[in-house]
Every structure is written in C-alpha cells, then in structure tokens.
Image (tube, rainbow, N blue to C red):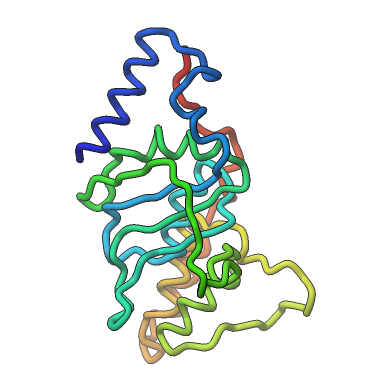
Length: 204
C-alpha cells in the first residue's frame, strides 16, 4: 500500500509541476521493459493476467509466482512488454486499481533470470498459455482446424464474452440438455474485440 501511495504521489507532483514526459521519474527505467505486480487475486490464471495487462501493450513474458508444492498462485510476479512505453501506462493506470476487492501494485522492475531458468518457459503466447492451463486441469488442448505452422488464433487476447464461452464449454456438464443452447447464446453475445486507442498517462 505504501508503494502504491508513493507512486501516486510522484505522478501527482509531476502533474502539478508540469513535468514533461522526458523529465518524468519513469525515465529512470527506460532501460527495462519489465514491471512487477502484486496483490492480484490468487484465483487469476496467467491468461487472466495477460488479458488485464494487454490493455496497455503487448506482453512478451510473464512469470507468475506459484507455490512449489501446491502450484497455487502467490498473486505476484513479473511481466515484460514488447514496447517499454507500455510499462509507464501499466504502472500509472493499473497501480492502485481494485480487482476482485484487492488493490493491485504495479511498478517498474529490472528482472534477472535465475541460472537454472529457461526464459522461453515464460515467453507469452496464447496457445502456450491455454496449453499450460489445460494441462494443469488434466485436459488436452484441441488442435482441430489448426494447420501446422499457422499462427494460432488463440494468441489474440480474448474478450470477456469469449472467456465466458470458453469457461462454459470446459466446465458445463456434457449430459445437460441445455448445454448446447447456452453455448449458442454465448456465441451470439460475442462482439468484435476492441481495437481503439489505449489510455494515456496524464502529462504536463
């Protein structure tokens, strides 16, 4: 909470004093495209986290800290954006935001991989995220309709209705005669993904 307040105070001071983006405190982190986050609800998956943070740019790396024995999320981790400027937006707009009743902490970071760590393990790709999450549930990833070498459509972040449809398909009882009807209803609710501009950090 103290870290959230400190960042908010820095941003407020810059706005009040008319500090230009070139002189902002963010410039101290122009050498890194990493952020760290904390305070996330423990039930959020890697896919959920990518959906949240992709509002401000394209993530290319995500490491969610998990308990070694249970595999449960600890609610914190590291994320890297393709464009470093996305870090500023995420820090300013997501830091202090409330998700499922919890205040989220977001700050710049300089991440260093452990010697025994394979960076590719945490590279972000929607097909990989879905595969890991299905594997954790003991399910196989469907590949029907995907040709080898093609870019998987799942790499695009899913909108809310698509996530709800996926959850319905995975969790609904196959013996329920209403399943087909509910799935069709969810498909009709789907709308094209938002492709407009992103939020901008206030500047002097």
